[in-house]
Length: 425
Image 1 (cartoon, rainbow, N blue to C red):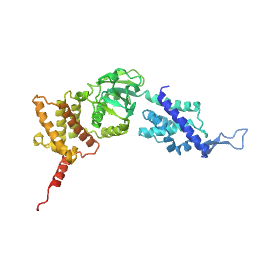
Image 2 (image 1 turned 30 degrees about the vertical axis):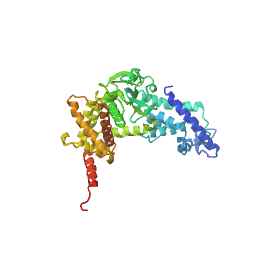
Image 3 (image 1 turned 90 degrees about the horizontal axis):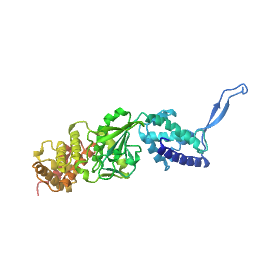
Image 4 (image 1 turned 90 degrees about the vertical axis):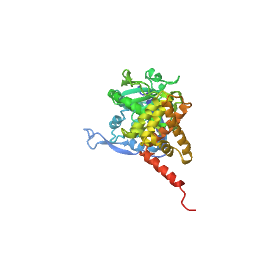
């Protein structure tokens, strides 16, 4: 059996669905029937064709989809189906005219069709191994045929820790603990690992082996999204492995990957189960809105470089360059960066403190350029990185006006107007 977890999940759902549907029948809810002709008149049966009653199981199940979706086994079965390719071919083979594009909607449709197939022509919803195995083999054959054409790429993400065994993202991307990717090369979990903890793996499903050429750019965008989502020492291993279908694994050079840099000795990014839906939405949204050019794209690249720098002093310079591109087009001699960043990233009573820290960072940059030692530099760079991360992430998600300079100046003007007292006694 190629898909043992899928078999287990679908069997659990089929058993629970059988119990629920049979209970409805026992409670008096009747399965509708239609009259079906069974063959034309024969020499012995000249008067009329034979007819029989056929239960409309599919219609009965459709009316109870809401109830079935609340079963405890429904969500695990849907998650197993979401990651599979080939469900469109399965749905069409069962006569479905409309195949949903969204992976979860497609999984929901497959569960409905699958249960209908398990209980086809049955009005008592008694489940047998023969019925289930027949339906599962049909599904598995179509999925297996599709998987033979797919390529799988796996790569380590040092500094990322998952609470769940795996997290499904969009467009055929999964985040998995290394033990949840059976058959993957051992080196993929340990290449560029931080400390004695193996890497979390990113698993990409590709339409064919040729898509592996575009995989490095996709992986770097994924790592950027993880870094923008929350502070943590997340990186990309320098090499990945790819295979077509169940063929041999082949090494893919990622040109150095994306090292964790100066933050590598810090805390990893730990993704809790409660954060998974939020991260899934964040990665999808930022992926769609990632700019190809302009100040924001340039600032994002400087943020990437800051995360990869081996020294916090180098990172601080990159972060200031990113912020100046967005907030200080007049140039650093204007001295406006601390004012504008404080206006956007702090509430009014905290703006003075943030203004002071950013102004100090600007002075510290000059000290670094002069080759002098600065105490507490890691904490200073981490503070500036957090505000840069918030600014870039909120802009990509649409929470901030892309004209950050204009937005900051409007806030400063409003604050100044509020503090002006009217003339007179």
